[in-house]
Amino acid sequence: MKRTVIAAVLPALVSVHSTALAQDDKTTEETQPEISNADFSGLDLAPASEWKLRRYNDRCRLSRNFGTGENATTLWLEQGTKEPAYNLTLIGGTVRYPYGPAVRLQFGDENEIIRSYISAKSSRGRPILMMFGVSLTQPQQYDNDKNDFMDVALSSEREAAISTLTVRTAVPRKFRLILENMGESFQRLRACGEAIHAKLTDASLPAEGGAASGPSPIGMDEWSKKIDYPRYLARSGMEGRIQILLTVKANGKVGNCFIERSNRPQLFDDSVCLSMMKIGQFEPATDAAGEPVASFYRTSVTFQLN
Image (tube, rainbow, N blue to C red; front, side):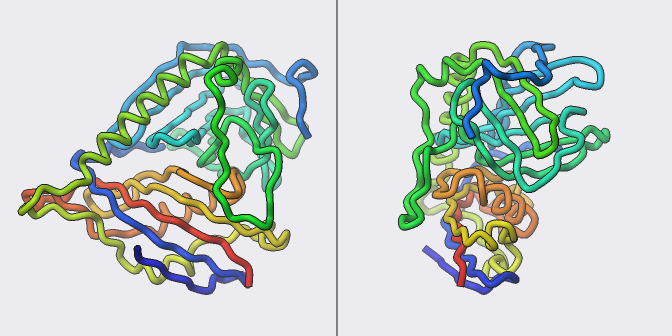
């Protein structure tokens, strides 16, 4: 497994080591303290549509609309692996003015999650709040002396008990999506994600005697210089290790990013995925006929202070 360690802009080290998984299918391009819910006093947004599950070549998306008028909000939950983490996107006026380095999420009565986010606008000018590697609960505590990946999986019973998603930002602007019973929806999304993972894993095995090959990174030795080490985490002395899975399109560009494992869940995930989607360049994978195809590339990124 190839590994590089290069000094970043901040007084820190970022290391990257990777493996490749080939995929036969073309990737579809697309513009893409604990608080009890009983005490909630913010804006409640009722469902304005049914849950919709859509499958792409590299991911599955569970989506639903909530609220009306200026409070209309769309929720996307995406998964492309068998891990209990999701790419979460909120679209609408309710996320127009995020502030500060973190947002708070709470699924039902699970532990509140404090994590980073990415703020942007859609092609139609709608505000977007994006988060990579969102788990359904926050681990109870961190052990700074260990570098083990943390288990954030929930039992099916706890998943089924989730019926709301509360979103709080640094300013006094909070709202809650009435998800209704999520047990079946999570099962459908998980099954779809596992099917994607199995299909791509099977497709990663090149046929004997053929011209199939996995993606090859271009300029990987320079990647660590360009990966952003969040300044507030560096100032806090926080280090982390994240394992991600990148979708590499047939043209060699990175199409998507999924968090597989993280020893600091919710903190470094957005920085890793956003950076890798910007800087990642590859010689694309090829099929048995030598034609370029979409692929998966597994990478581990370590944030380490000097």
